[in-house]
Image (cartoon, rainbow, N blue to C red; front, side, top):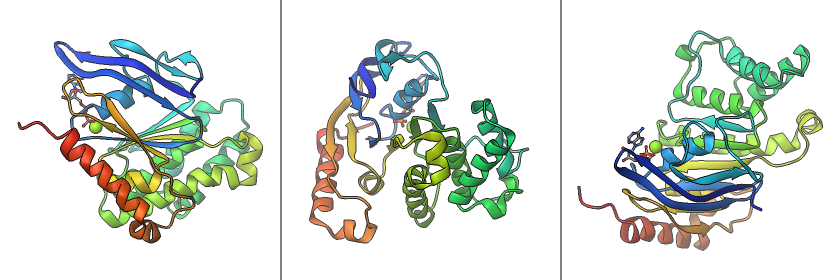
Length: 270
Ligand code: ADP
Ligand code: MG
C-alpha cells in the first residue's frame, strides 16, 4: 500500500471536467513534483489532497485511510502565503505550533518555534510583521510554519513562483536544508523520530522540479487533464546545482519533460 494513494480521481466544476481519472502513488519520504501547464488542474488536485475540496469521483488515501477534510498530518504552503498580517514572524509560527502540538509544554513549543526560525535564517527578524519583510522572507516563514507543525506530508503549491530567480534558487536550497534538518537535528529527531517528510511540490519550473525531486508527475492539459507520465530523477543527493546543470542526466530529463509538455501534452490553441 502506497503512503499517499490517488485512485481514479475525477473533479468536475458544474459541467466542466477539470480532472479525469487521475492516479498516483506517492512513497513515504520522497519529493515528488506535479508539473503541467497553467490551468491544467495542479492546484485543484493539491487542494483535494489538502482536504480543502473533495473529488467528484474516486478516492485519495493517506496511509490507507480516506481523507476527510484537512488535518495536521498535511502542511500546506501556497504561492501567496497566508501569514497572519497582525502577528510577528515569531507569533505566526508559534500560533501554528501551539494549535497542533497541544500536548507539548510551553517551553517545548517555544523551542520548536525557535529551531525552525533559526533553520530558515529568520531568528533575527522574528519580531517583524509580514508587511515589514520581503517576499522571500515571507515564504521562509510559511515554510518554517508548515514544517514546525510536524506534518507527514508537505504540500507546496508553486511556493517560489512569485519570487525572482535568485531568491527562488536560495529558497529551493533552504527547502532541502529544512527537509534534511528535521532528520539531522538531535532535538527534533528526539521528539519527532527519524522519518523523512514526504513533499509534493506543484511547479511549472522544469529546473526546479529536477533539482528538488525524486520523481516528476507530468500532467496533460485540461479539460479532463490527468497525470500522464511519471519521470524518474535518478540524480544522487546531496545535489549541487551547477554540477547538475552540466550533467548529461539533467539534460536528458529536461529534454524528456520539454517534449512531454510542448509536444505530447501541448497547450491547445486558445
Ligand atoms: P493550475 O493550478 O494547474 O494552474 P487549477 O487547478 O487552478 O489549475 O485550475 C484547473 C481548471 O479548473 C481551470 O480551468 C480552472 O478554471 C478550473 N477551476 C478551478 N477551480 C475552480 C472552481 N472552484 N470553480 C470552477 N472552475 C474551477
Ligand atoms: Mg495553480
